[in-house]
Each structure stands twice: as C-alpha cells, then as structure tokens.
Length: 444
Image (cartoon, rainbow, N blue to C red):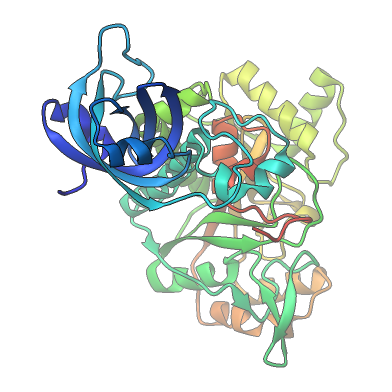
C-alpha cells in the first residue's frame, strides 16, 4: 500500500490507508493505546484497540515509545463527539490501527519530551541536543519561515531581473579588509573564508548588470550577543547603471516588502505558534541620515552616539523606536555613514567626503541589511585602498575589474537569520540557525 501524508487523511474517511512517521507521543488507556504520529505534513492520532487486535499487534503496540519510526495501516474514522482536537488539522479524525511496521527504535534515553508545546530549557541545552530539539514543532516552524525567506528572495530577485550567481568561499584576499576574517593554510598558501561575496558580485555586474547570491559568509568577530553569528546566510545583490544610491534602497525596499508579505501569506500557522504580529510597513520606508538620527536620539531619548562612529545596538533600538512612533514603521533606512565606518570600496559623498553613500536597513530596531554605492573607477579605488592603510597589490584582480570599465553600481547584503529572528521575536538569533557557529560552538 502506498503511503499517504498525514495532512491528506481527513479526505480519506472510510478508507484503509498507510501512514509513516515518528511517534510524537503515546498514551496508554488500558485496552486502548493512543499515539500521535508525526510526519512532515502534520500530526495524526492513531488508536490501537487491544481487545480487537491480533495478539502480535497488541503486544508490539504496547512497546511503542516516542520517536520510534513506524508505518501504520488502518481505517480512517471520524472521532467520537467530544474527542475532537481543534488545534490540529486532523483533529476530527483518527486511524484505527490494523497493521504496524517498526522501521527504527530509539536506542538511548530521551533527554526531553518533544510532545510538549514549549521546550523550556537553557539555550546551551537546546543547542547541545540540537539533533533532537530541531524535531520539535516550534523549531520546525522557525525553519519553515527561514525557507520562505530564501524562496521569496530568489523569486523577487528574478522578478527584478537579477541573475543568480555562486561565488567562492575560499579566497586569497580578505574581502572587507580589516582583521575579522578566518585564515587557514591552502596548499602552502594563506587563504581566507569569505566575509562576503563583495568582490565577485561586483565582477558579476560586468557580466549581467544585476546579480544576486544566497550563500554563507564568515566573520571572525568575538561577539557574545543575541544578534551575532560567526557563520550565517547572506542574501546579496549588486546592480549596475545606477544614477544615485537611492536607487539601491528603492530596490531593496521592494525586496524586503515582498519577503515579509510572503511570510504572512505562507506561514500563518508557524507565525501563530510564536504569537507573531504583522510588521508595520508604510508605503515608503523612511530614510534618515545617521548624523540626523544621532541628534534625534540624543534630544528625544537622552542617549548619545559618538560622532564619526558607527551606531551601536542601543542606538539602533532607539532609531527603531523613533521610526515606529513617528512613521508607524518597523523599517527604517539609516544613511550616510562615516567613511571610517565603511569598507574601502564604499563611494564617498561628494557633498561631504567624510560621509559615504551608504545605508543600513533596520527592522524592529536591529540592522538586517547593509549596502552602498561602490567606487567604480580604478584610480579612485586605489587611492581609497591606500587611505585605509591597505596594499593595492593585495587586491590586483579586483582593481583590474575597474580598469576594464565598470558602470556606477551598488548593492546590499541582507541577513536571512536576522529577518527570522525579528519576525518571530526569538530570544536569540542562534535559534534561527540550524547549527549555529559562535565563539564557543563548533558542534553539532
């Protein structure tokens, strides 16, 4: 008999079917044993009537335990009145088991109960037992939202005429400069793990004008916060023939709005598990210069952000609060960051050379994207590299790109995990990552 997914069983009342999955929970009521069977599509109640079963089925059914992997055949029936469960799609039906096949048994003691609505445990335990905690209903919901973000990003980028590319993550030059990179020996040469696909996506502009990538990036930053990871998925883009850097924000605005709307369209049940509320999204996301938001935060919230410095997490939080209060928006662009706070390839503002044509996009008071217009002339790029105390020889192939002619261009990097983290109001971004990598964690 061919397997039927759990979510399809309500349409099979009166039929004999086969379902396969994990035992989510088990309840022994003497002559009746109830199990909740879990597969990728949902949860279904299965009833073993010991008095009506053959001896072998009755004996085996009494041994069943959570997380055993089984296949069960039986008839789909409506539940008795008063026994329905409105919290699940299959809550009006059940299967009366007639055959049972055990595919795998649990070989060690279960350290937690996956049938509970909440996994109330320390983060360290949650991540230590990751191979098991990922099976929990709320964990799976997180990564269904994660998958929607990836799918929506790819879909909207195609609509906007971007071409998807894949760039190397083992590279010979640190793509951001600075010191926040991982190094290792590569057949006798010094190699780096890519901090971003920056150089390669700019090269991609010379191929297709508009390119995007979905891939991992690596940051050697010793953070112990709820919002940082040392490896995460970056949603990158680069676009050519721009007239000004506002065009980059215009496109990113379309992208983030599409992603957020997609989540609320496709993940209603997942969002409900976290009591997530739709974000406030205005027709146009507000934009404000960093130096202006500094003044506002100081005057309105009595918090000072030093001049010529990046905005800190507290400042971002207050900027997000201001955007909600003034614009009824959970999103806000902060623009014109100081030159000292941006990578060497960022275009300076001609009206104020100490500032750059750059931006961050904040969502609920946390940066989820960063971007800018790039320097597209080789001589200006070389000059800037030297100003950053770096050696142009280390960036030869990158500089050559501009010697062969490049249009004005710019782009962004959008953090997938941060979107999920803020949408679901998770206590830490680590819960939005299958197997997080941070200062203390290399396994599982």
